[in-house]
Image 1 (cartoon, helix red, strand yellow):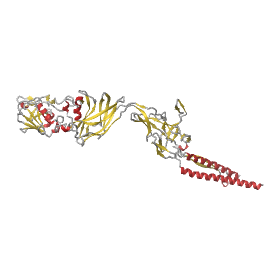
Image 2: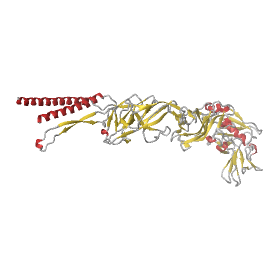
Image 3: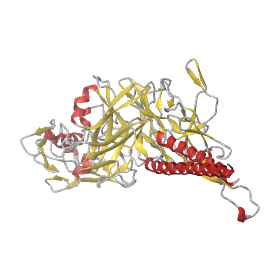
Length: 616
């Protein structure tokens, strides 16, 4: 019986080594197969029954397959944007069609799993790998990027259309120069707002471009309303912009002079004359009749200095009569009349002081019209010459129509700017050409934005060339809008982006490293379309292998669990985990073992023949 048992054991050895050879052969054959997981061979001995351990003999052998699904294959780069690989744990959820209906694949709802990520878009817009498995995932809201549901479905991207999105936000960052250089500034009178690169509001007449509703300089021919401030002459009379200089209690007479920040004002005679600018001196001097009014004097000062928008720039100067009496120049230039305190206020003009005798303060009016907040067509050249470019951007209205928005900055006072957008490039006459966004931008001496302080403003009713965009938020991060010195005197725009776009048709898809399918549309937008889902198993190596590097769940593997610790790499492929050198080593061992088993059979045969010869 022992000889025949040996024959049986040798045969089991031959069968087992043949099984191992088959696995080695399959591994070597699939060395270049994407996502392939090799199969090892495990041997299990078969021991015959024996009541006494001393009589126990070696038994046969049984070969078993051993999966290596959990062993990672090498990940390499791919030139195909829809090729993906998994680094670590997990499987792609896939389905294979059971047939087609009207050229459309049909599915039975059974989900399989694979690591073969060589997916490409077919004619119907499905992502299919080389083995014919269709990729699954969850659709994504193109506006929010959030998944639409939690149950994976077969993905299809076919003629996707994205509707237009109106611009609602512009992100902006820029540095405004401390001293802007405009076309008008080189030839403007020294010390004027124009010479300093600013916008002279007096150059725009009744169409003042400053923020609508706000007071505007210059204050010309100022009047006083309320309780009148009185000249202490005899009889006392209210001092207004029409008060004659020669009628003051200490009259201005011919030959008197006064100096305002270096500008000489000469009083020529007792006869009223139109203020005359004498350009032969630097700075220019002014000739004025002593019979002129307080308002005429203010006009003359404005004429000489051009400093009609920022009187505070001459705060250090004094108005000086030849008698040596002085009055603060800021007071004169800003209002011409100054009343301090709510009662018993002091009224100053030309060095003469009177009180309101305990009455409430008078209110200066009549100076400069309120801002209209726009520039008309006839003032465009002046506006362009007294402002600097703020950049340009294309935005979109609700219908997806592109709208080109041109921006310009105008300095209305040192450290104070207004922002404008071009409403109509073809505006003429009284038509609106540029619109003020309605906000004073104020900077401190350190160049930091003081107001507005909320990190952004709203541009109301943005309309360009008849195309209405609507309310648009102009946002600027902390420190994004500054006023620092610039050698060129121009605005440096660091960022200008917006969130609108026109309607578009899907052109191509790609999968990024976050496992998100991104669509490129004809409008230039890259929009998230879907999110690839991964699954994992508690008993991964007990999955049932299917054709095409796919697997099915088994009782031993457990059901699929949504989510996995592995990460997706875009434009990549995971190769086979087969090691050729290792397989060749196994091949040699298997060959030797097979030959040894055949030797056992040969030996057992010789022994049987010897036994038969004894009987003969």
